Image (cartoon, helix red, strand yellow):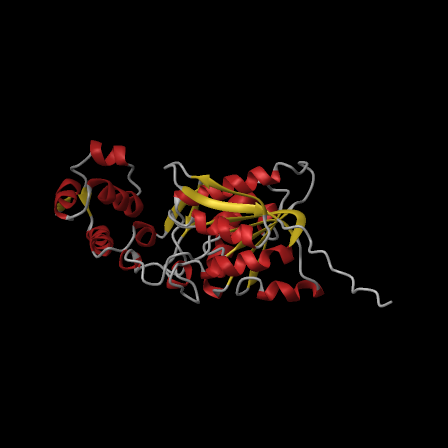
Length: 297
């Protein structure tokens, strides 16, 4: 017979992590666990707790072990096929919602989430701004399956079926063939891969998909995918549309420079709760003026 208190002492985990596993497996709140340490663990529950604890001790992130992660007040299902949503990315959602405030509540602004992964950004936007038409794309078909499942679970039933349009695409490639013409958006948001291919932090992120970290075409500075997005996004925005990009803690200067070089207007960076410049963006460049050929006398 194994008691809860005995397992907590022997599991080799930090107390909060151990309590999280017990809450998931047994449905006991932390208060219940503290109040009743003498609770007996049945053999099947004990085996499951030991298996989950072993995964945590091996370095697997809690979100993958539990299969879920909270983001923007919603609980998302998470698998190793998608990046784990981080609190920092909530800034990207907040900024997108600020841009959508310019639209009347009854209007239907169109928003694109590029590299949607678990669907965290797209679902949070669709949940908070129900009138918006949200599109979400990802190069990974498996990731899109996770995102679609999250949309079905987290959005109201009357909205879940068509609230988000999911597209499998290597960035903008597939959008050029949608409905015969490239769609135009009022806001494009993205938390793209931005980790440099030889970044020393990569071993600590080994459980997360490389596609979401360094991208399909890893680069020495981590900005390869951001360069591609910045260069092409204007083709898919209305003249008053915004591009908003999450990036690394030390990449704000470089991302602003990329935006400015491509003619993006009102370029800015926003700081997260830690004071780090985490999101940069800009207003769609003005249409290029086509020069008329000189008249021949």
